[in-house]
Length: 582
Image (cartoon, rainbow, N blue to C red):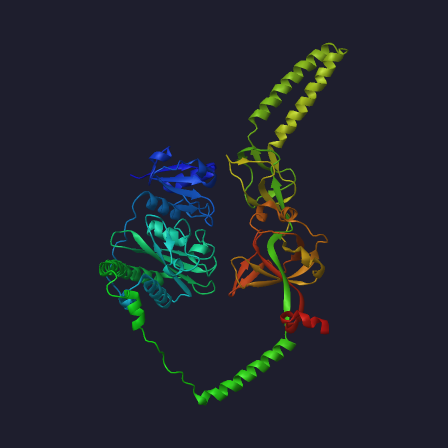
């Protein structure tokens, strides 16, 4: 049975991997005896270069380390991580042959795939095969974009033949992305918006994480994956369904013999070319170039449409001139935005320690001083008990001789130490600071927390939401209350919401200060560079509508805010020098 070892700096990551494996792999303690090794990014440097196992890194998929076979994040679902680890620990098995069609629908799918596959019979080069596969996929699965990435099992390289021979080359690897997942596991996979496995530079350089994707491996006769077919649809179109998955599965099996035959053809051609050598006075390439036709077809101009085309061109130029002179173009100030609750109060820890118990649950009501959670206080309780006993002992001696100044001073010192110990014991209790309703609880028993960590949040009365936008600092003079923010939430493209600006900060602040304004729980997810100005606006409704369906706003949702700050004629934007004639 295959083995696995885990070396992470976070205990929660180690527990996650062990839970996912669930006895599917044998857990060992040393990297030298493991078929697959899971490490955190900060522990990778400590792994010896000659470790034989396959290395999986918990880190950033956008920057996979050279030694990593694949990079994962904590956002991965358990079943996807389990499939990846099992596949990397053992040789991937080819999929079982598809069953014969048993219904009219399955028969129609099979016929469509076979008809599309016949188009590949004429290809004789890898580049032509890639181009043909992309065209077939777009038409067969009704896609907006498609890619064919070839895969080398030994080196882990993923490449497009057209891009590989371009000026920049193609240095992609199967260390991340949906394409890398399909290549490593041999399993087809689909992804909707914000799939944690998606890496745009590998999977879909022309799209974004909000689109629908499918990645289907193409196995060879040796059982290994030799290519990955990728298809994408825009987010506003329907998701890729079961029929498309069935078509992709049928078609990918038809591609297998084509790739094998193409490989044999190219290898045979190379052998024949080497055997022929440079026979004759001229090289074979020169003779082929000489045989190509020297002249193309005669240029034919139809007088019937030439006149009409001329006047259409004149009208187009006249219309363009009118547009340039009369139309106006707007300038927008844009920046990241977050939805925050105005009645939310975060409850933070005053000291570090391990959580012993949690006293509340979401939806519970609180008053000032209500116990939220209790930290491990065994040391503090022992200190209070010891000082209470010491205080009683000193007090007895002092009562026997009230005039003893030394004993009086000692009693005062013990009393001060006891008060300090009781204060430390009280700090081990996390209490609510305001009355309200518990919104979320972010801790669990046994968890370690540090000072300032958010334990829970309390909402006072009816929840009210506002939008906090961070606009570029140089736009501060043009921003004012009463202007309108156009808000687009992440994951809800083109669902624009209008929010009236209620306040604009008078000062321009830096990124560090802006993060303090947003709160530590959301500031890390928002890109900040340069100085910004804080703009606030109150949401008119707790809900927004997308495609006729209502959705609720929630505290912490992020997006992009735009404010139109000025407009000017198009001619000024195209020719700035004309402003002096204004």
